[in-house]
Image (cartoon, rainbow, N blue to C red; front, side, top):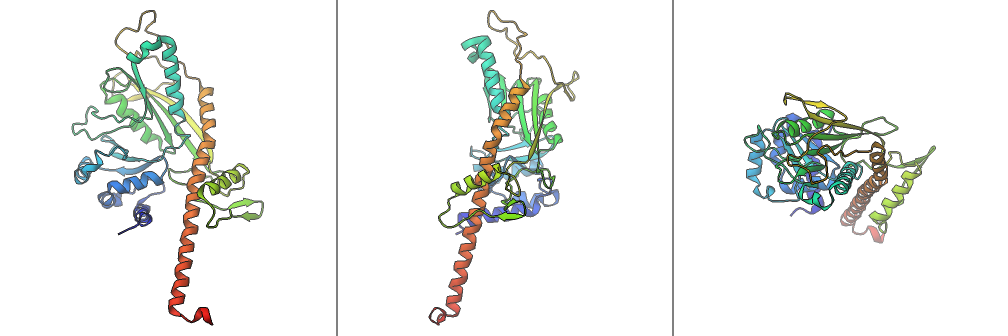
Length: 361
């Protein structure tokens, strides 16, 4: 019977050869990989990767056959994945970074406070403000294979789809984010009127490499020409090691920082007049509900989003992302040390078996 660590190793070794530099699974190896991956493997991936793990293009037939093979997948709320039947993209929703969630926090708090200030308690009967809810039933998708989990949304009470959708992308390609926007704006019978996209790009300062979704490998620390390695022994806990890494990162001593240089691009999209494509429009006015607003309020009441306020949310989230990554890097270092100790113990045991008189000589 395989141990938990052995199962994790199998999953990681299985996925590593088929991952391309862009963090998407190479199409040539996708079918064989997709047929092997099981619901428990999904859980392992979700626990070990950041953001979204893009599995590339999967046909609807492949997806449905896989669901039929593992019916427990559909009923397991722990498993989070998205599928766009138009782009054929399948994503596993893995560990969300605090910085990724900055848009969600800013948007939901801002919308809730504005609507409550305008409509008071009546807002509870007007709209739902939420995140992490799955939506399906998109138009033009007869098989119903598309599933989306927006980072944040506003839905008119009784509506099938959100009126406003927020999507945050962390080192995801712009085209992937635009495909999501098209699904919302063109395949919801006009119910989704606005899609707000916040796209983060992370660049590590030394190598200038764009960071992909996934854990950052643990590195040594450097100070000038001298190299430091955190002291790790049997008594060193993951929490203590994470604190060491976090402090070393603040001092700029990590060879690979916990968070690289971040840039963010905010875009707002709506459907074109013909309803056949999407267009970018940084400022727009949309009627968000058909019913008249509560007495004493105009139908053109506005919600204003402050870019400086959003920036504060992002900046405030960065230390939490650093702590998150420090913990995961510490777990990897701790695991490596434990593995080395096991190898050394095994080697000593093997030597004793080969040379039983050795200790007495």
